[in-house]
Length: 391
Image 1: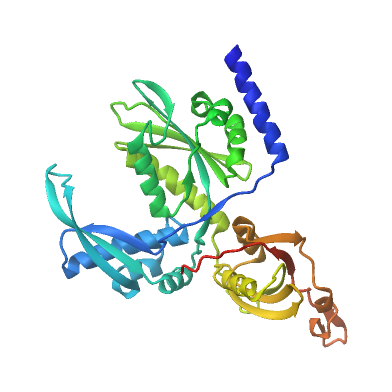
Image 2: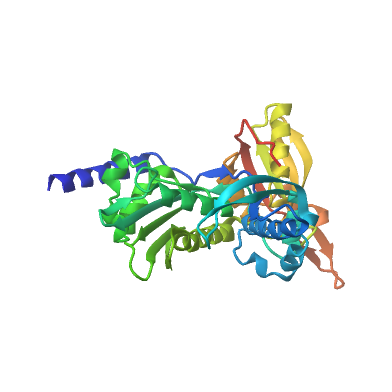
């Protein structure tokens, strides 16, 4: 009874804390999006082509955020000649166990860096989306069952499971975070909560981490037919469930990682609108110096949802930009909210000057004045002191 009272008290404290301290989804910059490696037998031209194809496929899926990207005709044709997209490559000699003989043998690890611009052009030509390098974090509550019972998976309790999960997530460019398992976590969420997929306490206990999504999973004890796992993804106040099975941990974990990555990319990835005249007005205040201006401009120019940025007007500490969109305005707002370098300070409103200008009106053949829709306008405050210059 005392334990239950302590648990309820802990959840009450956590709930009150969430009321006082509202949080927003966190984003991290994923490094090395355009780098991949593959194991090859030697340094021959044939091995380079085969290894390069595998590395290119991994990069395309990671950048597009689409596990089915390789089914595209344009992508499959590009995979036939991966060298066209390579920027540089090299080899590391290593020793790996042969899965057929169980004996160690020398192999080469082919490491490839692909040209980001060429990859992006290929993905857009195939009609696919670009998932920006700033990606939302997913909090993972994972419980494993074995002969000793049920326990949370972390570096101390199940290091091999953690290593496999992190490698799979890295292949997809999916940022995963795990609970600290401190007293607050222990009071808020128990292994029984996750095992029973009781998502109310799991979601409530996740608030302190401000994730974009919460993944709860349970891996059943091994059986004669292999391993089985069940998963629940909580995202945008909705829950989706799936099962996975396999003979090894990679086969069990991979479907969950792919599913979560596809879901996040479907929300945040940028799909080209294809229109050259799609632009909005973006008003930004808080620009106090030339350094602020340079950083702000660099930040906007590297956003995947923006095709082109032109400065329109400068007034004291505010700047008015004409922004040509690669996607739609909703996607741009999602990315800005995720990065938190620009803070929205007012709702979207049409610019008054544009709405009444003669350029926004035309006279039809019947002499009737036709009014064109006002150009969308967004207002933000610049709130960043550092912007990464990594391409």
